[in-house]
Structures are given as C-alpha cells and as structure tokens.
Image 1 (cartoon, one colour):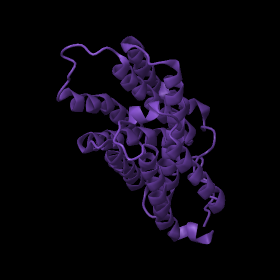
Image 2: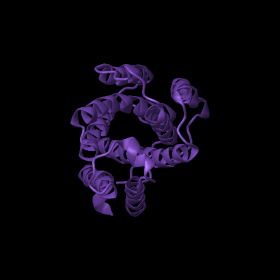
Image 3: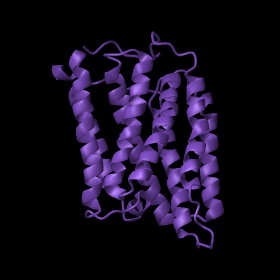
Image 4: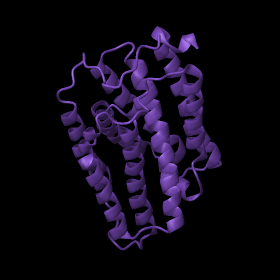
Length: 265
C-alpha cells in the first residue's frame, strides 16, 4: 500500500484514527443499548468487545500496510527497564488501595483485567505506535510526542457519549494527556512499545479495580467527596507526568530511537 507510506502516511493514519475511534466509542454505545453507564458498569456486563474489535482493526491495518517501525520489539537495552520503578510503585499502590477498600468479586476482577489488556494494546498501538510514527514523518521528535499526547488525551472526551458525563470526560481527557507523556517517555527510553502497553493495561486495571471496589463497598454517611473528585485525579497523575518529563529531559528533536528501522518509503 504505497499511499500508506511517505508523505501520505500521516493523512492515512488520521483516517485510521477516525475509524478506530468510531469502532471504540460507537461500538461501546451499541453494546450498552444506548444506555448511559459508567466505564466500570460497562466492564461489569462483559468483555469490551468494541475495544477488541478496534484492536483487531489496527492489527489488520498494520499487516496490510507493512509498517515495521511501530516498536513491537524487545527493550534495548534490557537495562532500560529500570525506569519502570515508579510505574511499578503506582500499580502496587493502586492494587493495595483496592484491597484495603475491599476487592470486587474475582469474576469481575478477571473481566477488568481482560478488558484493560485490550485497552492497553489498542490505545498504545493507535497512539504511541501508528500516530506517533506517522507524525514523525512530518515533524520533529518533540512536536510528535506532544501531538501524540494531546490526541491521546482529547479522544477521552468522547467517553461522554457513553457515560453522559461531559465534565468527568473532560477531566479524564486532561489527566490522560498528562499520562500520555509518561507512556511516551517509556517508549522513547526503552525503544519498545511493549513496556508502555503493559503499564497502560496495569494502570487501567488498578484504577478500575479501585472504582469497582468503591462501588461494591458499603456507603456510609459523608461519602460525598465533592470537589476533591476533580482535584484528586490531577494530583494523582501529576507525579506521573513530571516523571515522564524528567525521563525526556535530554531528548532532542534530532534524536532517533535506537530501534528505528530503515525508512519504509
């Protein structure tokens, strides 16, 4: 597919992005029967088949286009995985907090894990894989990283179509943009998309586990957190964002990832 390479790669990738977003969002609306529900409620009803379908669509696109530079390789060097200490601390903290609140039933936990694995695969392949590499054919490294993170965050606004909660979706979009810099830093520093996929999946698994634990726990008086419901997610993600910026502190526009393949033009 020559039109998926060279200067045409970015517009083609944006079309892929539009189709992927349509499958993900409107597939979720179709699965819910048009009823507004939280993301956790959707998980409780069964696998997120829309996310699975969106990921399989991306796999088909990659196979047809022959893109070989999406970083589906082992980290190089393996010692680069040392940067995952803070992500590991986040995951342990999330799961520990869910356990303190009271873990949801095992079948729900397994459903959350299965679904978040596909979320990590689908979103990282779309953003840190396809869109990031497409942007790099037109702009330098830093603009490509910033653009990818903003696109990643902004797509979360569409969750309002499923949940009916625009303000929460906007908050999620903002925090996702901040998190996007951490996922991007992991890709750049390890030269592999796999650590970002695994961390993304476990991050979502941890946060959804906390949400499911809160919903299943007895609600006592004074359970309303008010404005803290909007402040806490930002405070939670801020160290995540700052760590990503720290990891990228010496990355220059002229830098090339160590695992870059020869040009596919």
